[in-house]
Length: 264
Image (cartoon, rainbow, N blue to C red; front, top):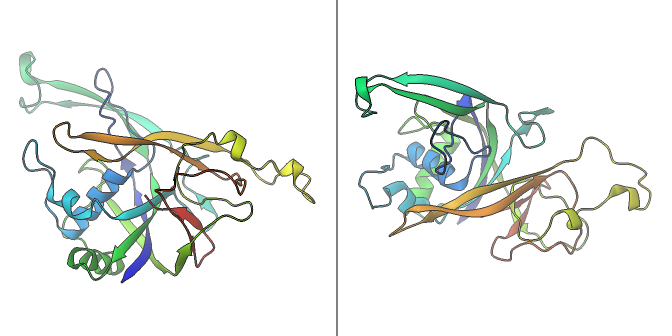
């Protein structure tokens, strides 16, 4: 039996390291991405992490087929982001253990870009007929965790709240619509958005309109590369034309709250 649930994930700081950055500064992804969320869910469920070079971790093997959806959090009239972007800061520190650097003195000086107060709404499709997913469903609902989950680094612990369960149905657009989550973009978004000035009975748009884009990991390319697999994502509060083309492989769902999300 399939259950669609959501939780709100929050942390004081976050660091979702981009693997293609190193010197002189480590950069972070802005958005929580699927591999990172699977790591968080794996920690909650008590699954093993990376143990051996050249071998995918237990949590990823068990959870990689989960369908999930993510959005920067807005709740009770408060947005934790600005047009899809989170505040960031630069943190500098020294690693003086002598194990992190081969330089004289063994002192590694690190400069990291970190997210400030990142918060996300995450939807997860769970099959409670599956033992692993049933355990995760119960742990999310009851606020339990086997291991302390964190936002990219173990010093950035996180918490979650507002567990919600939804009725849902497949969404097929027959009129203009808005997607309330991140979605995978293969067509130009600019030409697919609805301009309110040209809608009958609507003279102007209300509020600030924005489009946010990021090239994000969606999973891993496994052996022999063991690297992130990427897709182009968008997040916007613009309405989209009914004929805007979205990838058929990633289904849209309409929830009992009238939210429309893309599961990937």
